[in-house]
Image 1 (spheres, one colour):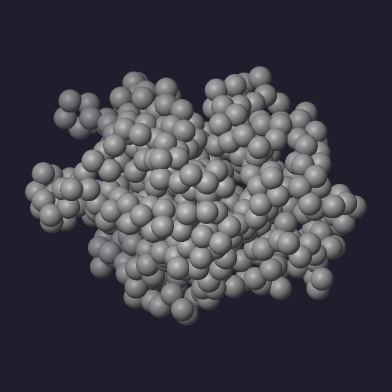
Image 2: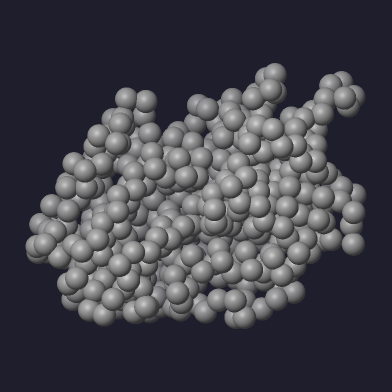
Length: 504
């Protein structure tokens, strides 16, 4: 066993995954969490016999999660029950068209061919293209990012060089989708994958079309009892391994030692609640990188270049969430539902160019009770309604607009076929981007940190090693490779790998 100690700031998924990996390596690990329970951006809420997941809506890339438990010497099946969700999503369009997205590519092709003329063959070609992106671009971006030129040989790079134009192409995700599909309905389905990384499909690089391959080929999954069970399972696994958790322990700053050569800074621990000092050999920050810089490193004389660049990059979408208990069951709804806006381009321009919420937004409605009846009383449904909004602007006051924007969403859903929905509400909770930011320290309420609106944005995210400060490591959705459950777990893999390399 190692005699080294690590402090993990934040008990989100990235923080707990880092703690598990560090503990497996023999380190003593303490996780400090400002809230009273684990989860971070993955949260839950219970009231009146209903249970709602807040945050991620679906689990994909399950091998990443399986590998984490195996690394801990455990079996995923002993902690969690994975339930496939198919159709993955039901899409409702303004003209009344309804299309299901299936995890089975053959069923999805049949669905599209039946309703959208000549688009079945287009789907096959698109999925082959998306697989090429995944096999080459995904390897570099997600699983094994290059560290030296020799790493390219590890991927049999020369054999795959034919896929480089697709990976490095300058076209946007939406432009490639428009070129491959004639149907406006199918286009909207595939454009929406940009929102998975908090971005506009009209600026997101075409590389991110690989997300479609991940979902359709790997499937979408639910966890029996709710997605929050994942946070509980990681906490249980970590505790069983000997990780210590301390709640109501907000870290106010990182302890820095500048006694090294040339005044180089090194993290030596943290300060909790402005007066409790805790020392450690390494500090892993499961927090928004700009929160780390603006709040935890206030005494550092000059921001490293990566933080200065981050301040200028576009921020990702922010979430406006409604939790509804509904005493009526609408038969047309599935577990995952999307009601598309009339004009996708206008919606994203409202958000990213005009910086105000759309008046006719695309609306996601998740009803986990359709898969897991324990999530709502008999004959009723638990709605998680999510609308993407701009990152918080200084002149935008959500405390004044929360009720009016809730009414915009309710009226829109009633006009799209959920007749008299307002009359069937028995419970409601509103969560604005400001509420989300206050609980998670997400900078400007941006759920994924920064948007991916150019190839530069892919590289602008900080690496695991915090630049300019030895012994401080970044993990979570704001670090590479990005947001979402599997990517956050992969960021922990990178961060702990860096910790162990530096400790040798």
